[in-house]
Length: 131
Image (cartoon, rainbow, N blue to C red; front, side, top):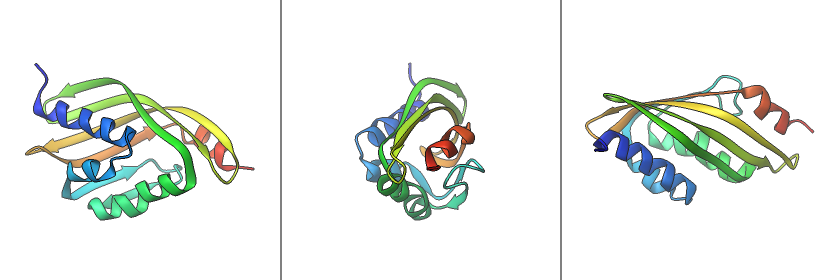
């Protein structure tokens, strides 16, 4: 039986793949702490869904073609969900494509994500940004 936490996180990846960002944002708590890996183009911590939208999702949508985050494995430990998967996309400014593994750590409380932390090989992403 799939838990409500796991169901919610899976739904986020499904919505993201369809470009349904409003559904992704609905899963985030009002004070979510969203941390992109240092060295990632949008590295740092964003507080709240509107900060995540403007600091991460809008940039992904405007600076990349076909950016994707495809999960391959979900690991559940109570209120923590770890997602392993693969990023991909083409950086518009350089036309370079990248593929990089990721790990995402979600913390869930009362059916909402209260924190998100990204782990990825930022050097692979950085190579796509360089002409």
